[in-house]
Length: 135
Image (cartoon, rainbow, N blue to C red; front, side, top):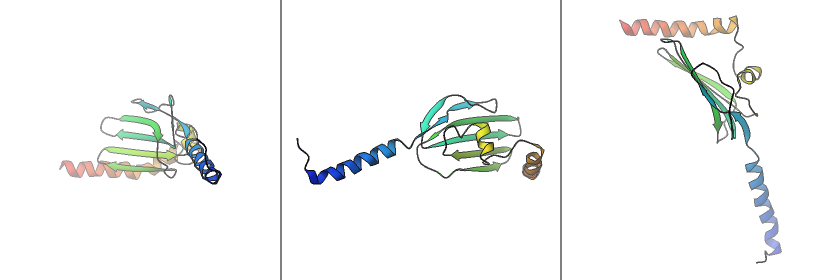
C-alpha cells in the first residue's frame, strides 16, 4: 500500500500529536495510609493527586495519593463539615504529591506553630457547630 505524497504531512502531524500526548504523563506516588502519610508506590498520569481526610471525633487521618488522567490546575482545596475535614491537592510535576514536595511548592502549609494558629478558627468553628447541633 502506497501513501500519496500529499497525505504525508498530515500523517506526520498526527503521529507527532500522538507522541506528544503520550509523552505528557508524569510519575506520582500511589499509596493509601491510615497512619496519616505515605510516600511509596508509583503510578503514571497527567497530574498527581493527594487526598487527606481527618475526623476530629476519633483523631483518624487517612491519606490517599495517586494519579489523575485529566489535566487540572495545581492547587489545594479544603472543605469541612461537622467533625470531618478533607483536603485535595493536585500538582503537575513528577512525584509532586509527596509530603515535602507539596510543602516546598507552597500548595500545603509548613507544619509549624503558625499553621496551627491559622487553622484554629476552623477547628473552633467545627467544635461550636457540633455543640450547637447536639443541643
